Image (tube, rainbow, N blue to C red; front, top):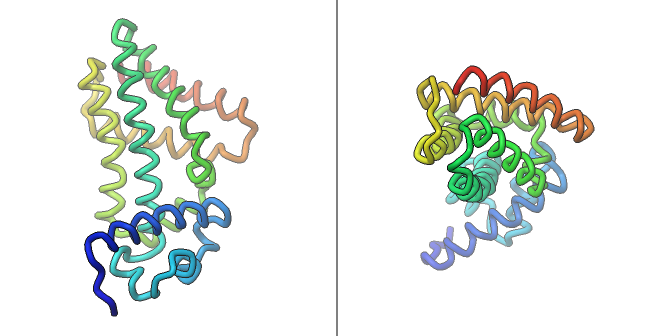
Amino acid sequence: MPKFSEQEKVRIEQLLLTEGERLFTAYGLRKVTIDDIVKAVNIAKASFYKFYEGKEYLFLDIVQREQKEIFQILDGVLEESKGQKDCERVKNAFAVMSALMRKYPLLQAIDEETTELIMRKVSPERLAEFRMQGFDAVKTMETKGIKFKYDTAVVSQLFWALYQSWIVLQGQPEKMQERVINIMLDGVIQQIL
């Protein structure tokens, strides 16, 4: 098996993320094989495993990268809304995040089947790391002055549940999705602020 230079590792990792996103968006996590990915990246199958334990791990890295971009924008939105009430700021933050999530085809393609496959295939440690990103989003809200009644872990899990609800609603018309999420969000905001 060839050894890769640091430059080659960076290039291959970027290709894995780019090609993985393209394939997963087009065909879904279940249908894409590691053979499809290595063919698109032009590496040996054994080389893939130097980077990822499985395709589900690659999928999570791609999703996390997209979510990080969303959270960076969220940071700016929260900074700009400092004079507003906390409930308005949280609701506005969710509206912005929801609109941004629609711009990422892979995030829109996540469904219950994809979520279930990831839960079965990915280690509990890696799933916990993935969920910590939501924890970081709550911490960002707190550093921007939003005061929650509950600790960060509880609020993070509530937001994770809203995210899962958003995934479940993907097959519904956009107006229905917005209405249901807004009702749920209003109830959550009443309880946590």
